Length: 146
Ligand code: FES
Image 1: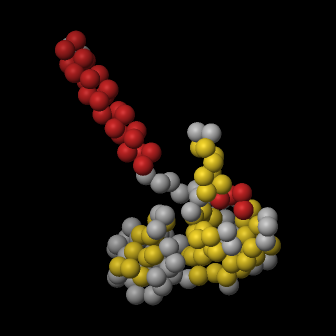
Image 2 (image 1 turned 90 degrees about the horizontal axis):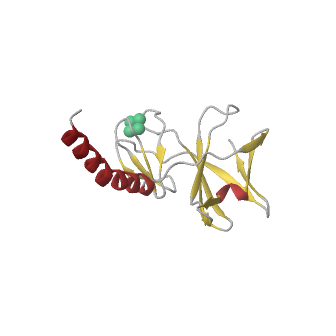
Image 3 (image 1 turned 30 degrees about the vertical axis):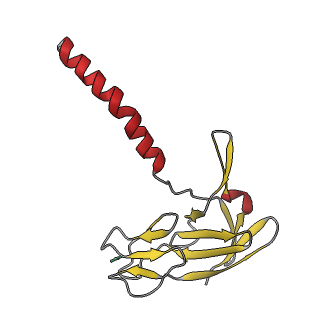
């Protein structure tokens, strides 16, 4: 590589690098929680909703669960100290796995969009997401699988 091309490449990387890193940090990633399952009850520690990042503690607004004990992933949204909504991540249109975000769940197959309470916001899906009963105590959240 010629010296001038090398310098030009380094300059572009130097300018674009921080921008790309900044954009990536802005994207929310899905956190998959550790759970225990007994019968049809999934136990999630409340601490799974706590995120420690750069010496800062924050509350996660949602977590996802993928476990061999059941055939579909689940997303649990936290709306308050004792207010949770647990949703199946299976699209009600044709069964693709949804991508959960803070406020919505989107389907990569045909573009359906659901609210974080499982309601259809954008078709082609026309049925709300399957929701599971959630209870809690001081330590844990319990998702009661159907
Ligand atoms: S399977 Fe989700 S929109 Fe079709």
